[in-house]
Image 1 (tube, rainbow, N blue to C red):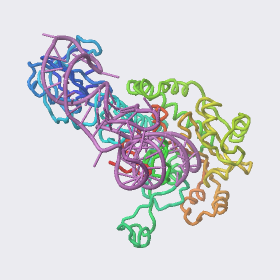
Image 2: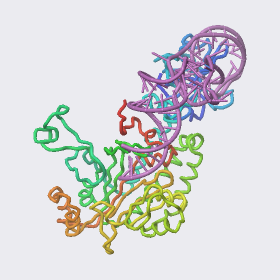
Image 3: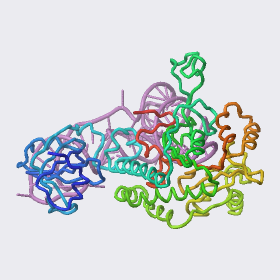
Image 4: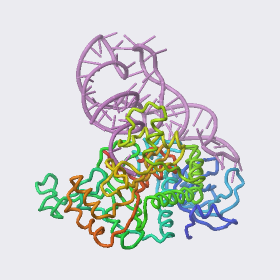
Length: 456
RNA sequence: UCCCCGGUAGCUCAACCGGCAGAGCGGGUGGCUGUUAACCACUAGGUUGGGGAUUCGAGUUCCUCCCGGGGAGCCA
């Protein structure tokens, strides 16, 4: 008999006398002559209740169908006489596909700590919370493509391997085809004949495509070798990077705001059931947070004004606040959590604390850069208008003593048909943290990679 | 890399001033005609993260290493 997914079975309009489901036992409750089994197949948060008695073929195997076992159940889908569920399956045939030894199966039908589940990342998707998390992750990934597709963006795949150590964001992982400790590592005898790295951003590769296809975006893995051992950092994470031709910083901020609102709205509607789990057990404020997000325009604050606000706050910050210094975590939190109490776009940063490619403003002091700060998560988006003027960009590269020759291809885009353009990067895992209320980035990645951590 | 907290049964945690290592859940066995965090009874389960030191005696104090969590820096 053809397998029905539990999500579809639970959504049935009418009973059925022949249905087959396959999944994993979450819990079993035995009475004297019959048993209840709750089966989950990952298609949705809810499981389906199976009632089995001696009339069912294979009933003798029920004693081995403990938590974690893979089973197939055939029977009739009937309205449940019990409380708590609309439908249940009265089994006519039970099959044990894969047993799970109850003495050694690590997952119990009780709540486990995130720290414990992190150690069994290969089994945690079988829990309600992580099943829900990864369904939401999938759904939001697709929503990202929907958003850009609806606006005529081209989805661009930029390389994971790069020879450029000047992408301007963070520490890089080196890649080699040489034996460990070989003297030729990264040199002339190595695979590429020169040092190779894992990408820290697709932006520089995306810009030329924006200046050809108009609007493009990348969505893929990104690698940072910083020894940032915090709940908000991973060595491997996914980043969304739109890049738009004929766009300035205001267009950039408008796009970032529309993008996030689209994703928040999508989570509230398309991921409703899964999201409610997080609202109940992880962070009771997540739904309200998303609704606040949608309710009004994001606050926008020039950096200089943000500095004034921080100074006027009367707060005794650990780190100094003055024009020209980067905002520290405590400052970002004050702006997003205390001052605005919601998402805030801070823009026009001093040029000395920002990357070389950001467009210089006429004041000679600032660049057209923006960060989106959100409560609890901190920096969710970083973006800018790109310096499109060849002479200004060349001068800036020289001023910073960067290797001009390495940027030949990049500067070509400013040499031939240059145009204003802008873009931003969004850390996908941080978005998931914001939406679900999960506080550790390692719990929104299937198999997290971080400093001193490379398991599974 | 720095600062703080923690590591005790499969899981979550107790154990007072240094004095016999415990509970709940989970597991096993038995019971129960509709359960749903099922319920009731019984039962097994420990090198207290590793190493060293102090002491008549260390889960508890000291040193050191390992692992986990939180904060900072850096960033998305």
